[in-house]
Every structure is written in C-alpha cells, then in structure tokens.
Amino acid sequence: MNSKELTIEAGRAESQYWKDLWKYRELFYFLAWRDILVRYKQTVIGMAWALIRPFLTMVVFTAVFQGVAKLPSEGNAPYPILVFAGLLPWQFFSGALSECSNSLVNNANLLSKVYFPRLIVPTSAVIVSFVDFLISGMILLGLMAYYNFIPDWRILTLPLFTLIAFAASIGTGLWLAALTVEYRDFRYVVPFLVQIGLYISPVGYSSTKIPEQWRLLYSLNPMVGVIDGFRWAILGGESQIYLPGFALSVALVILMLVSGIWYFRRMERTFADVV
Image 1: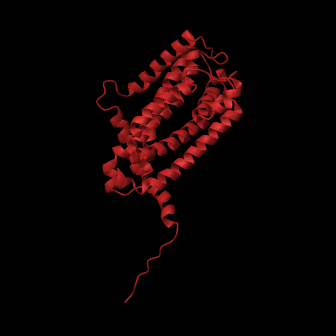
Image 2: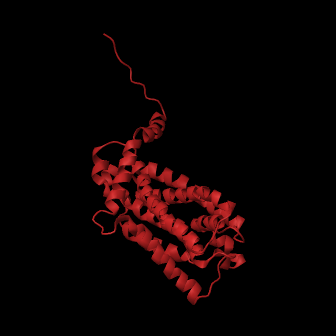
C-alpha cells in the first residue's frame, strides 16, 4: 500500500500569497470595473461629475486665495493652473482613501465565502479614483489651452509623481481598510481626515508661502511632496521643489506603503470573522 507524504514548508504560504495576486488578476479587473460602473450608475450626467467637481473646486479656491487673499502664483503660471496642479493629486488621494476605507466592509459577502488575496479589494478600489484622476486631467489640458500655457520638459516626469501619489494612496488606504473592519468608527473618521487634509495640504496655495523654518515640519504631510512634485512638473519655469521636504515626504510615503501592507497582511486572517 503506497502512502502519500504531506510536506509543510515554512514560509510557503506567504510566498504563495504573492503568486495568488497574479493568479487572481481577473478578479482585480472585475472589482475595479464593477466599482467604476456602480459609482456613476443612475446619475444624470454620469462621469461628467469627475469634471464638474474638480472644476468648481478650482474656481472657488482661485476666487478665495487669489481674489480675496491676493496670494501670488508660482512664476508666470496662471493661478487656476497652479490650483488645479495641486487639486489633481489631492482628489486622487482623498478619493482613494474614501473608496479603500469601506472596500472590505462593502464586500463582506465576498470575503466570507470565497478565498482570494484580500489585498485585491482595496487596491482595486484605488483604480476608481485613478479613473477620475485621468478624466480630470482633461480640465488641466483645457486650462492650458485657454491660457495658452505650454509646459516645458518637466512634464515628462509627471508619471513619476503619479506613481508616488499611487503609493501614498494605497499605503494609507490599506491602513484605513483594515482599521475600518476592526473599528467601524473609522467610517466617520475618514471624511473628517479628508476635510482637514485639504486645508493642511498646499492645494489652493503654493507651499512656498510656508515660512522657511517650518517647511521641513510641514513636509511631514506626505501629500506636500506629491503636490509640490506635480506643480514642479506641470508649471515648470520658476517653480522649484524644496528638496529636503520632498525627500522627507517620499520617505514617509514609502514607510506608509510598507507598513500598510504589513498591517493589512497581519489582520487579513481575521477579516472573514470580523466583517
């Protein structure tokens, strides 16, 4: 009688998990596409909301910070373009946080019935905000055409700063997704954090208006480096990056991403029971 041996290899489950991310890539595509469709289902103007919301926000910020506060732009760039260059990454980031934080709770039935790497759920939710980001980019192109503003070679570096924005969104989103499963109060905390973050990030104004002695401390907000990078790439000319602050912001983004993956994987085995 032949007997079969079962070999348990240390660390195999962990290595298999990352292989499963690729194996279940079609589920990633399905969840992302489903969330995109649901987002604008039964709305009158559909995806046009991705254009209307940032455009109106840009108009309000321009009126308040330039019209009322009389804040100058960076170099020769028109103030609306300065605002929108900061609004693009911020709305991507804030939208991703909102989508990620509730992603596991909204897919509770799926989590409790089928095995797949749970990391797929919040990362697919980020794609919804990225689609909005791409659509909103049309407004930036329209503003450039309206003001006859031509960017220089720095615009070629924009994908790099978009990648940093992606890392910031996923890292923070993983933390909030896991915490929302464990503590449902975070469903109410996230909108508050997004609202506060809008004012402490240089969206409606240039970070150069922050006093020099506070610039490094101000860069503890990771989105400061991301927004400054976007403006440096889009505005060109006299726009400059505060390198110590940018390096600090990027380091914090990397830390947030690595720690977010670690915490999410640590809590993942309990999701089906708690959710």
